[in-house]
Length: 155
Image (cartoon, rainbow, N blue to C red; front, side):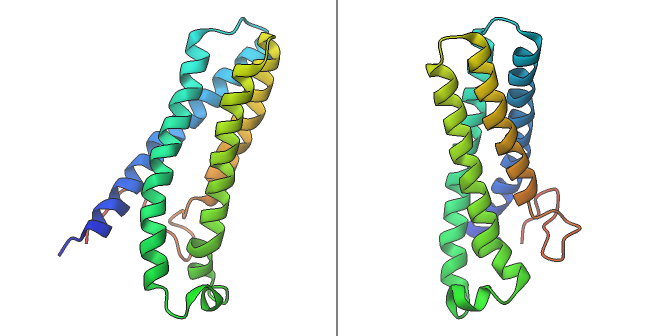
């Protein structure tokens, strides 16, 4: 029987791909603007905002899963530290994604506050690029012993 938890997990899996697409688009736009010395455009702000919004949605879904995960974790966090799979979801994944979320928000806010276009692009490229790397590092890829499927599954 499919539970609400299964549905949220499946949705979290789908939104992952939307976040990655937004991350790549925003990061590339910032990098191209910085290196190409082009003027800042509304499109650049919109791509950053898309990245922020998708990360916020993904984080909300992740928090729902995390709270549920902690309630089901036998022995609490102390036991999880000794098991690579449990530790990944209890600590590594959560911390990595929160750091990525902070970088995405910083990139959006700091780039908006800069006066010069190149400064906007530079801070956006650095923050969004680092956030994208953290996201990629924090995904439970299927080839990991504790990995998840690339596509959502129910049940």
